[in-house]
Image (cartoon, one colour):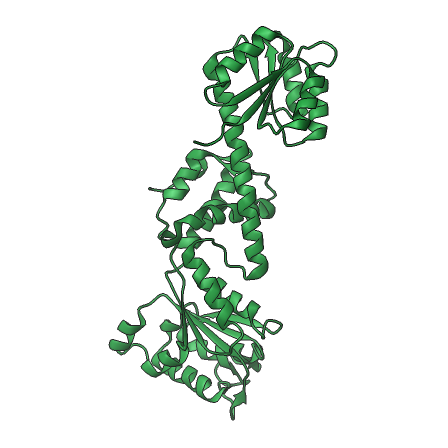
Length: 390
């Protein structure tokens, strides 16, 4: 059974102390003192999760006590107990850092709900901070976020293969982070100070892809008004990442195979080969074996590209990483959009934790950006997570 959280009651009325202890003792471990001075002394000796602080006390009132407590521990959760006629003072206390207030006479359920809400919020904030620390450590290392066994295995593999110059084929569903993996390999490699050039082969029309990759000479074709250096030359000494490499035509596949075999390229309209020193990483979400069987992809090129395979797991295969991504994207979009959102409500978290993510990490990123844009307060609620079917 988990330890009960310690709650300190600071109230000069003994009857109120006993009433509060009776209410709290089932779920929490309450202790009471009769003055602000005693309360300050007590929190120096023992760790408390939350304080219940009466506003009206002799010698040192609740406002002065709150001020001194916040000087000692700015993160201490304090709930003010006040008479209904002193609401103005309670609001002043909240401006000084109190979490909430409850008016006497209060309902037991109301008090317990306020305490639970405050403790749950603190728990979420601490959890988010722990997640941020994990994410920051991983970003410093290789930019791949995750703490699941599947992604730990990927990170370990990338660490082992980064220093080589072997070609690597990264596979995985769309949005699973294949380009992030490629960048991590480059970052950890001996080529990290040289360029990382990425080309999405599916996004460039077939008649332009050759010129994009290999460059062209002036007058090589209609519209070629100047010489253009291709991506392979621009990546000299560094890493060339070919995304969606399975979309290449047979003619382009043959030319890429020649680059791999001869370590040279020829510009469109050029007179001879140009030596290039690049490491080639490629990625795809297609079934290469089926493409080879159907004659859509060269088997010899496949084996050249796939010296070392890296498979990126889908997000639904590593659901335990979802909280890390939520924390990462919340921080990212807070900075980019100048927001100060601290956390997500339990209902919003439940939706995001249970959703299936057919679009993988990319989809979660879009969901979080939209939620940050739509949220006006400091907490993303269920209403900010729209359009998801769990």
